[in-house]
Length: 152
Image (cartoon, rainbow, N blue to C red; front, top):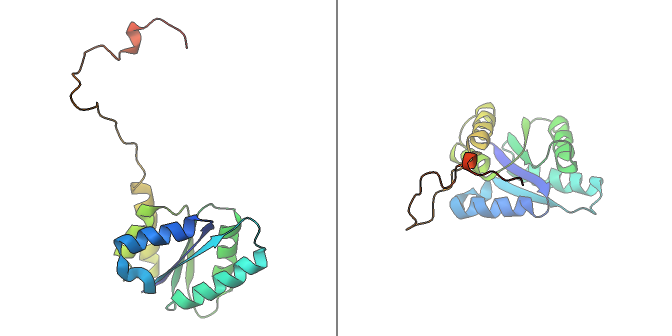
């Protein structure tokens, strides 16, 4: 089972870990989080991330980051390329559906887990239609923009 590590701008990483623990209380042994404050030196971030990664990898690990190209992602990429004897993958754009999907399928091989994480993230993002408030009748044409001749 690959370990999971979230490296993100504070307080996102710890918040996502809390959401994961709320839904999957048993995830504490496979999931770690590192909040990156704006004033933390990169060397310190990397050292702390390396310690957390050592705790969760088994020998594989998946690292989630919030934004590609930002400090958390750059640190994760350096870790993934420098860890010997372990396979480490990095996925940017972490969100709750991605994390939950990964926890649901945590027993799968790392490459399959990466695919499931990305699918969970993309399938979890959708436009949601709004509905009319309860007890309000539908009035045909009331919201028809063609009937209104005004400029905004």
